[in-house]
Structure formats: C-alpha cells, structure tokens
Image (cartoon, rainbow, N blue to C red; front, top):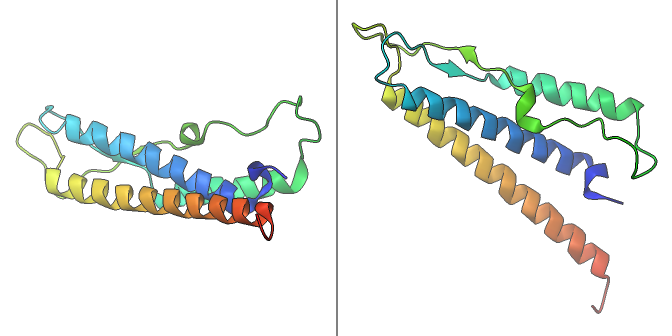
Length: 136
C-alpha cells in the first residue's frame, strides 16, 4: 500500500497545499502594502472544503491500477483561486491592505500548515513502526 492510498494522508497533503497557496496570496498582499489602488486577496476556507469534497468524489470512482497510468491528481496549490478581500481600512491612495490584519492571517496560516506537517510526519512514523513488526 502506498501513502497515496491512505485517505488521511491525502487530506493532510491537501491541507498543506491549501495553506501554502494561501500563504503565497498573503505574501503578495504584504508585498503590495504600499501599492496605490491595490486590493488584497485571500483564499477562503470554503474553497479548501470544496476541493476536499471533490477529492472524495474522485477517489470513489477512478482508481489507478497500474503505476504506468496517468495520475488524476493535480498540483495542490493550482486549484485555489484567490478572491478580492479588502481589509477594514482603505488609505487615501486606494490601497486597502492593513499590515496588522495580513500578518495575523499569515501567522494563523503558518500555524495550520505546521500542524498539518506534524500530523503527516507522525502518521508516516506510525506506518513505519507498524511495518517493522515486533522485535525489529
């Protein structure tokens, strides 16, 4: 059994892809904090939930029966589309990035990503331990 066949690991990889895509979007917002007329973007949690629901439906149908088959999985970050999400204030030049709000989102996203990575590593560790068997 490959790690791709374990639903928990698939969901954790999807979560890491979501948080990485969100982190890239938030980094662009911070980088454009002084750009006149810039409106920040964000990726909603519901977008992640929609991708997970789609992955569950896809897993229920097609299965790869030979390693030479083309995988139906696409790159994790490619499925999330940022949407305009203005912050609470807009400056005189039309920029609506509030650094404090963006940095709070960055910290939250980083914490969630690190949690998913930790759970993924622990899960792999448990699988390795189970594969070794007693007395190894």
